Image 1 (cartoon, rainbow, N blue to C red):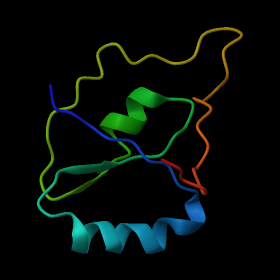
Image 2 (cartoon, rainbow, N blue to C red; image 1 turned 120 degrees about the vertical axis):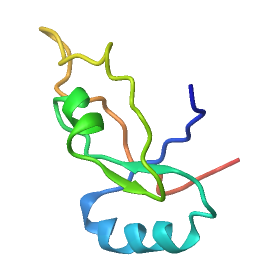
Image 3 (cartoon, helix red, strand yellow; image 1 turned 180 degrees about the vertical axis):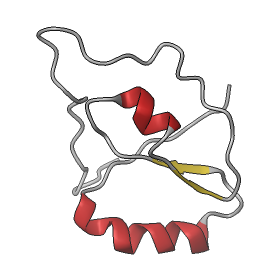
Length: 82
């Protein structure tokens, strides 16, 4: 198991964030993926890795069930606080 950190951003920032992460990753392994209604495919097939890739355990990742939202409702944090 590898510790991870999440941050989300809107599609219009990808052209800014991707090069910044590439130049400032400090050797960290970074996984970028979309947030669609298929989290398993997002993590296994629609990925962009910065530095080196690593195995992803997507065994328990499933599509949303009846009555669940199609994607996890995560919103970009444009006003971070401590």
